[in-house]
Image (cartoon, rainbow over all chains, first blue to last red; front, side, top):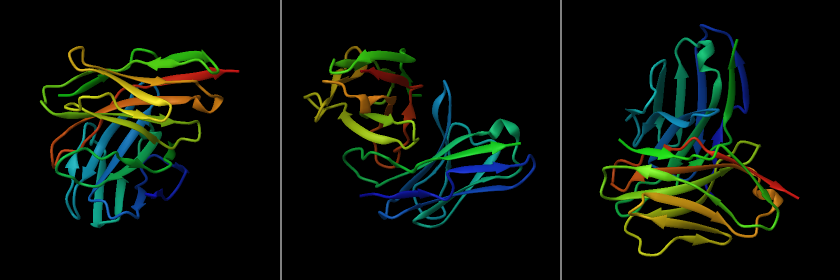
Amino acid sequence: DVKVTQSSRYLVKRTGEKVFLECVQDMDHENMFWYRQDPGLGLRLIYFSYDVKMKEKGDIPEGYSVSREKKERFSLILESASTNQTSMYLCASSPRTAYSNQPQHFGDGTRLSIL
Amino acid sequence: AQKITQTQPGMFVQEKEAVTLDCTYDTSDPSYGLFWYKQPSSGEMIFLIYQGSYDQQNATEGRYSLNFQKARKSANLVISASQLGDSAMYFCAMSPRSFGNEKLTFGTGTRLTIIP
């Protein structure tokens, strides 16, 4: 089974701090994604990466950056945390295929609170 | 741009009844994929079922089936014989069916509660 592991289930940080959320997958997937989930808004894509050192902005990239130095690891960085970044963050991965969509496999999520 | 609409914020269903969760979509892509995910209260997203836009038959996976009506742009999830463990948030999502663009667009979700 695919395993996507997020480093923390719960995290509390202070405004202005630099925050790192880590995600590791064990299935050699090319694609990795970071989403933010808020009540009534569903999941919104922050950034995704389709290869090592490659990244593309999603729908809400402002205030975030990402890093992918190794294929299995995708980090989300909050450069200067603000209270409006309090949310549930979900990491996902999927293989790249030419002919059909493959489902994305998700981690358990990190519930981040910025005080 | 792609858009997914789930108009039912919450639903209550008696155990053992069938339930239909609505999903409509909008896209200009000629080829796309539709997904349903389940999110229990523990938070993990569980993939349930997939339908490709050119698939002739509706997808089925055990108790889950996808009622795909392409002309109406709807992709409703049907759960037969509901169980207490089906209580969760359900998300409909879509992706362009093109290599190199596997981003998912999600709906806002439906919270399903199964009543004993």
